[in-house]
Image 1 (spheres, rainbow, N blue to C red):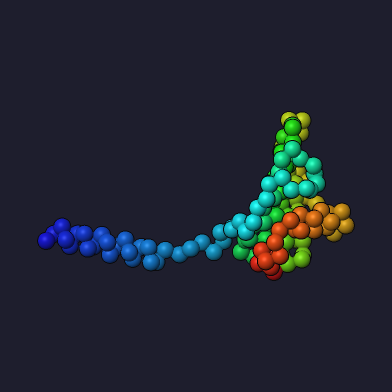
Image 2: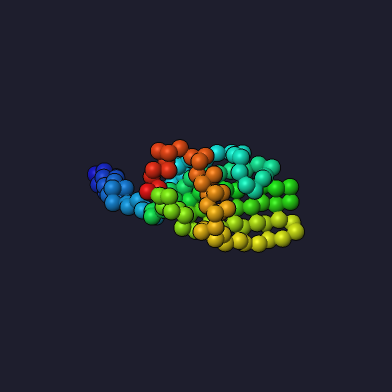
Length: 126
């Protein structure tokens, strides 16, 4: 009898815990990703991801070079580029560059990256 009561109590507690656990609204979701896209900077191999965050989206571009790696993050909402940054970790240097999002060259690079992703996934970034 005590074993049955203990079992029922444990099951009830477990079910209650599962039903009251909240999901994290700040979690990022990868909507789409591609390997070895045609993009600047030229790389030996690369990975481009479209990531949905709570209030915006990010295009993450990771490119591998013979001497290191570059990681770019392009943060945007809809058609509006909010910020963009590049981190280079190479054998000869490590540096971070914050892009001027008003610069036409940066806007062109951003749009070229966006064009690799499906319109239906980009729509989730509005």
